[in-house]
Image 1: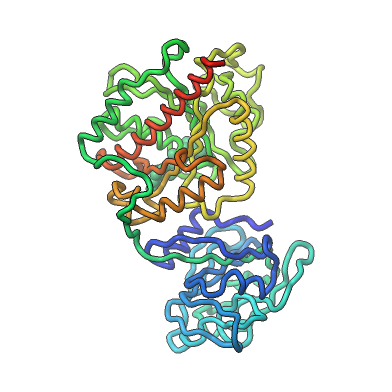
Image 2: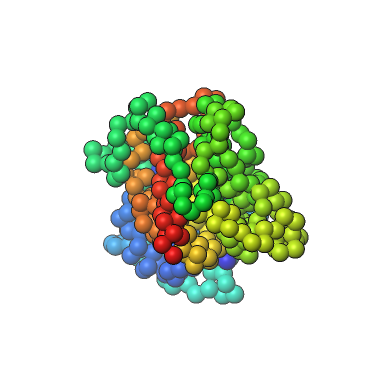
Length: 458
Ligand SMILES: Nc1nc2c(ncn2[C@@H]2O[C@H](COP(=O)(O)OP(=O)(O)OP(=O)(O)O)[C@@H](O)[C@H]2O)c(=O)[nH]1
Ligand SMILES: [Mg+2]
């Protein structure tokens, strides 16, 4: 099975296209079959697209065209001065290579015919392609091509394809280009964003207290999700807001393995030395493809068996024999709300294996009747127009559409999906970032209350 596009590879492609773009998967041969007819049915007249090929040498390359694919009519080529080829992975390592179309070959950017798949260049297939219907053999599709490239600036075609025409997968994405156009009909309504609104939100959270009769003094909010999604950064953002300065108490950063290696039940204090607020943000190790938080450890966390500051150990899973194991957890120790943290920039290519892991863990959460909410992070990276000011977020239709997609991915209602931008490179607090993060936190605490109410009813 092909390894899906990694976040940095996706970001590289978006950067090569330029501007603020969204990708929507139209066609995938491992899912839809490798057939020229199916390709044209799904991809014709859809405007700009990218085609991505994953070959058996873990090399990923493809092409972009701003023109329509068209299977109808005679075989023809299309003029496209914006077309280019790219390579974003070579032998399993992410790279970033762009091969623009040659100035004197603009008329030959792509070839269209009902009987051929996506083909860049004209005449002999210079770009690996297929015709008719291709059946896989030992899990790979053997494409045709490639001669020396004359339409695009690829000097060494062998290194472009890594000398392999054995294709594990091919995907075609529709590219929606252009900056966010805000709409007069916001997809979520909030009062006018100003300092008064910010202070009101802060006050609401300041005075928040869990239902007294439950005996719970601080609700336990579990942050979990893929490694690097922004779990620790969310705690840092909330902590910064209440401290009044940018802080980075929880280690955060980018590595291919989870940076967080301890289970932490962080408290947030009012100011530097003030009293703690009535919630704890529980930070965990991230979900990873092979390692990461184990489903059994996840269950122990949900049920309150795992102590604060437990150091994860990949060679020995947490269990009743582990140091600090809480044998008889009370309602105070249990998790009262689960926050699934998802990086907005990878929703379009959310790895299948991660979806499987997520669903199975969601099953455990559902079994226990714990409410769930999705924190959709990095919306500033997903939508560059929001980078300097996130206050227009609820008027940005593309974020509304992204929320729809995440609702579908997680099976949760749209109201449970809250987009945010964490503090990451800022030196000063910003009113817009604070408001968005506090809106998310307020929703989280409301949902936690629902759990405690149900607990009382039971
Ligand atoms: N631009 C941007 N970057 C973010 C945002 N949230 C997190 N980051 C960055 O993403 C990287 C990973 O963030 P972390 O908070 O360490 O992610 P995590 O989920 O705790 O990851 P692990 O502990 O490794 O599982 C860091 O470099 C953050 O600065 C965001 O909203 N916008
Ligand atoms: Mg972390």
